[in-house]
Amino acid sequence: MRVLFIGLASNFTEGMTYQENLLAEQVRADGNEVTIVADCHRFANGVLTRTNEENRLLDNGVRLIRKNYRNIMGEFVSGKIRAVDGLYEIIESQRPDIVFQHSPCSYEILTVSRYKQNNPAVRFYVRSHEDRHNSGTNVLSREVLHKMFYRSLVQRALPHIDKVFYITYETAEFLKMMYNIPNHMMEFFPLGGVIFEERSRNSKRNKIRQELGLKEEEILIAHTGKMNRKKRTEDVLEAFTKVPSDRLRLILIGSLSEDIRTKAERLVASDDRIRFLGWKSGDELLDHLCASDLYLQPGTQSATMQNAVCCRNAVAVCPYPSHKALLEDKAFYVESRQDIERLLRDVVRDADALENKRRELYRIASDVLDYRVLAARLYR
Image (tube, rainbow, N blue to C red):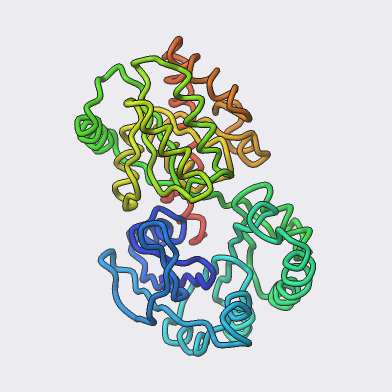
């Protein structure tokens, strides 16, 4: 089959562990021809940067085509409309059996809709990650950009869309409220992860733990991402420093934003059990997740949580409705710095509790989050 992914609002970056990367890789690994059409933005060491238009084959066999936004009233407006020249011709040249568009928030949803009208056998899926935490966060954005502009695009395209996928409960609510998408058109399609065979996972685990100088009985905790106040990184660090157990180790992977940098660096320097490892490639991040025992993310949601579960971690997260719907009682839920501190004391006292959560979550990973399972849903 030929599968075309369109991500004009996704800042596609090679080597990351986002759904835009891993789903395409799995579809290619399943023997399909895969092309990604992306915008000209990417991350470099955690910083969003501009890049050039290109058309090339990636090392994993996926073709990447980058297109600049059409200039409409300057860069800011262009970045909201997200229109590009020549998309219809690109789709025609690829002759896809499936078109999978990441995010409905692009003028080009109409272009794909027109192609679907002219080629009704093509399956057209739209996946949304938008929710009230990351989109429509001010009155102008909510009432004008989303409820008027994007809604008009979605409603015009909707008769030609086969399914609208949402990644969380909050996303489904956003789709209904902002774009008036009916329930029967939507389906849960979570962010997923890569599941390694036991031997491969153990090899990665042993290698990283040896590099970090960890003993087998030591509990490695991972906190990752673009760390800022919303990620609750300061609470993580403060709680960790108040639990003086020699069995606990904490690694921070990603970047520190300026709003927390001074305090975070001071807390890291105050405790030799904490290591700030900086930005890592997607493969390096997965290696470190295989080495860790507990993924701690008490703030805003992160795509890395699903990867951590697939790497056989227990997880401690904020009790968002989407987390509780997916993870049920198999995760640790933390809301305050005191909750984090209490959890750390508990896992030192009762290692079996950590191990039990890890095993229970791995069943969810195998049944729901494995990208082999998610990719197969596109072919049915």
